[in-house]
Each structure stands twice: as structure tokens, then as C-alpha cells.
Image (cartoon, rainbow, N blue to C red):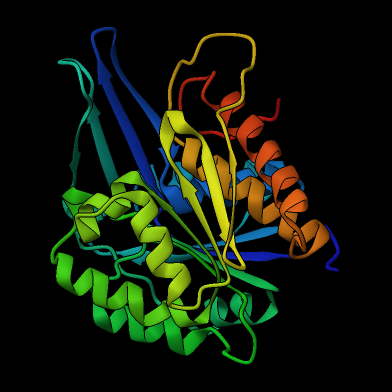
Length: 295
């Protein structure tokens, strides 16, 4: 059992999501790792985010946003400014473009970052540059290997992916240290050219104790101890406004459950965890942007 106040160190991206649609352009503080860190804080879990921003107005906005939500921040100041993800929704399916800062992101695993990792019962990694093998080496060196406590969402973005082969190599280099991995349909397609069920089975067969799969409108499932527990999308009042951040909300909710009550020890217990995660994701999808919402 772990107390609900146990901290989590989150490593990954922090950026500005620039949404363009027929009604205009709007900016939101975002990034998958930031979304999970803020989501955990909104669920009552003390969290520290380790990420790169620029010494600019966007970076200051991100730092202020994290402070408002009570998230600790160990920042790397990047030479190319703050990352931006442009989501253009003016012609049907969204098209994503990432600026130079996002494509060249890197994290300094210095003393402050190392302290945050050492003190955290869990270290969660999302949207990390796994195709930068030097960054992968620094990550694996920073996380103690005496017990599994690493949680990973590979979250590859086509606009930031320099080498699929190197990304897979870097991702698979850390799977042996993971307590839990969360993957989605896009991860399976981009990295392995496979279906989600196939990737989940591959990771479970490689020894990952718990693998969570998020399947969009088909809900989510977890493979644990060779058993699979599935849950559909939750039916909440109101229309779905924006699916941005749904997967991050699922991951934040699952990790909060692990921190609060420890590892689920039965299919029924995992069902309770997934039921709650589906409700949190559904509530999040009923608002614009990726900020986690509680039903």
C-alpha cells in the first residue's frame, strides 16, 4: 500500500497546443507529459514534471500554469524556445505540425531532476525522445533498477519522429524496467505497423507486468498476469467536444489508483480502476483542450 500523497516524477514534453479551426486560433498549455502531471495533481497526487521549455513568453506561461495547479517543475531551458504543436482542424481530420523546438527537445538529467526521480515511488515517462539513444541512456541511468517503478507511454508523434527504428530500440531498452506501459492504436501503427492487441501481447510476453491499451471509441483494456480486462467508453451526459487528452486522462487516473491503493490484485480490482479511468476520460472529452476533468 502506498499513501495517496506519494509523489510521482513525470518526464517528457511540455508545450503550447495551437488549435486552428474554422472559428479561429486558440492556444492551450499542453504536452502529453504535462497533461498527465497536471491530471495527477487534479486527482490529488503530488507530482513533479521534468521537461524542457524555452526562456520566452510561452515557457513562462507553461511554468505559471504548472504553478497554478500545484505541480513541481524541474525545467530544462532549451536553446530553440518553447515547443509548439499546431493542430489544424480546418479541413476535416486534424493535421499536426511541430516547431523546431519540439523536434529538437532534450532533457537535462541534472541533480535536481535526479533528486525528484530518487524521491518518487513512481517515475512516469510520456512523449520522450526515445529515438535519441543518448537521452535513453541518461533516462535508464537515472531510474533505480532495484524494483519496478517505471511507467511509460511511448506516445510517438510523427512530426517529431526522426527514426522509427531508433525509437523502437530506445523504447524497448526501458521495457524491462517497467511496472506498467500504456499504449494506444497510434503507437501500435506508427512503431510496429501492427494492431493494438498485437502490441499489448508483445509487451506482455516480453515481461511487462501490466499493459494498458487505449482503443479510442472501443474503450480501454489491461493485460495483467495473462488475463485481459476490458471496459467500454463511459456514457456521460453531454456531447463529446474534444478527444485531445483522453489517453493522458486514462493514464493519470490509472496511476492515481496505483498510488492510492497499490497494484490491483484481481480482475475485479482492475475493472474498478478502468471504470474510473473511462469516466475521467469521458469527462475530459466533454471540454475543449486536454485538461483532465473529474465527472
